[in-house]
Length: 445
Ligand SMILES: [Zn+2]
Ligand SMILES: [Zn+2]
Image (cartoon, rainbow, N blue to C red):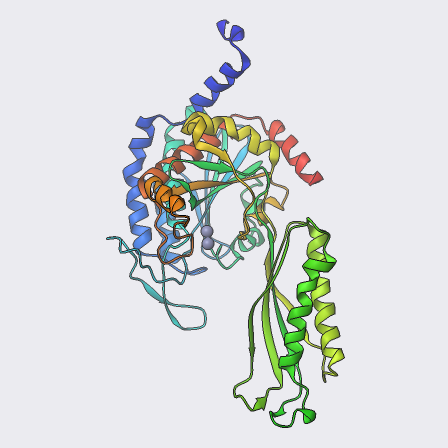
């Protein structure tokens, strides 16, 4: 074979090129994907209420030829396409939108309002780009079903509810995602943002983001007249001391160089200037990258809160509650490096960059924690010209969750489909043993 005389890199590139979808393949699915994007963008639904969204996605996947199951972990959708022996690869999209009023001025801007879980009327917008993720997965799904001769194994698509409220991934796992449908050999997801120009992707091998913990503290005092403080125990003063003492966790207790954030995001107490209230409340967010640092900080918050209350002779210990949290997303390094070549071949070498870890949280980590090697990568969504102008002016474009978040849909959606197909074809040409080796490495982490 003349092949064997080629340098290894050329062979690898040739193999990777074969995994990129052709422009003909892309154009054959793009109108469908774009139409779904416009529909979803104009009809967003809040977390755990994505009934129409899930039904639309399920119908499209079903008519494409997938075996579809709805209502997995609430509104979750699972679509399976079997194509002979081989690995099982999962591709995930989120379904949910946010309580944000869209102010992009786009002709297809959302005008939707809905009732939130507290019964309040709120505006709803796909301000995190999950509509683009769903459209991309639809295009990818259609290409994969039409090109079964290019891969083997089982493709598992999932539409996950309630990512924004952190709970949807866990809900699907609890409802038997990996026992009813099989545990995948690798899990893949992307996220669009405005940091990189549309047409690009960014890879972060290893740690992708941070552990996030939300803590609520209630400090108890003894209320009374503001003019007679000697008859009271002032919870506002205890709260003020506590907030300052909490600052010493990162500066004095955590080892220098460890990533750690302790932010008191709100404090609420009192109603009137001459009344000392009987309690004060505050809310914290904690971000870390290591399990031991995370435990150290949570323990220090409880210890300091209790000690400050005791120092003030508070009638009761404060209540310190960790009410939600998400673990960091870990990108299997070997998997990330394996997938760089097919992404470069599909999008162009200069369109694939390595990015630093970020701080926002994400519940894709629940899938990875089941022992599934994960690959979570960033999809550029910024209009290249606007991004260059913003950079020149020293500013940035409206980020995810902003009322002005508006990805450059055409190039971003095309790149999303191309990237997903290239990644899936690469993994669905691997042997399950190769991928199992990655999983074994994951245990070490
Ligand atoms: Zn978001
Ligand atoms: Zn998001």
